[in-house]
Amino acid sequence: MIERHFDQQLGALRKNLIQMASMVETAIANAVKSLIERNSDLARLVVKSDEQIDSLELEIDKQCVDLLALRQPLAIDLRFITSAIKITNNLERMGDLAVNIAERVIPLNQEPQLKPLIDIPRMATITQTMVKDSIDAFVNRDTVLARSVYERDSTVDSLNDQIFRELLTYMMQDPANITRAVHLILISRHLERIADHSTNIAEEVVYIVKAKVVKHRSYSLEES
Image (cartoon, rainbow, N blue to C red; front, top):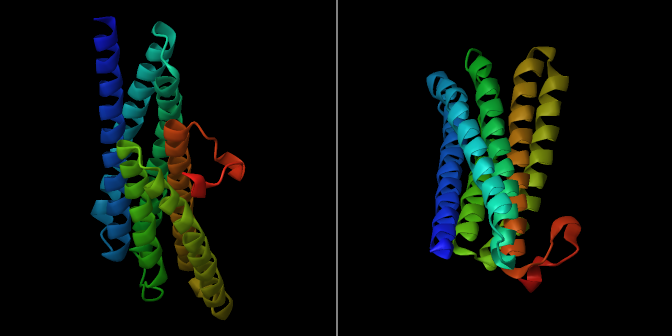
């Protein structure tokens, strides 16, 4: 009976994590869409949605603390609970970064478009896929998919550098471009950070399944 109740609590925790991940995915997608479609109302919706994400983070944290304090979980369950805390933190930061993007979009939309958006939407697509796949890897305990998330991070980093260099040229050509270029540089940086958080979640998946710590690359994901 006690074990059944514990399994139900773990199930509720898992359900809340998946719900929070879905909310974060939606916030990121809407933030990117608000940029591409120049839709400030959608950007404001992203900003407003952050309260729900934060509230769910607190609920999940409480669930984790209760499970650790009141139960004596076995090794794999202990890894799941401790990783859930870290995953929730990464998801919350992703939600914040989606808000940061939306907050940059609103003033951008009040000005003429600086340039056609090519690399940022490409970067956003890769980043959004990384977010989805990191969560799918968590749900399915799929270390191979987790590894693929990690491998895409360098592509996002390269695009971020490329976008920065291009926008720096625009700023040097005309000081009137500086404000808009800075907004776009920061949006690119926020997307790069979202990709980093996806990588963090992928690392936690390997830890849950394999009991291997891949932080600081002490363990190769190729072994997963």
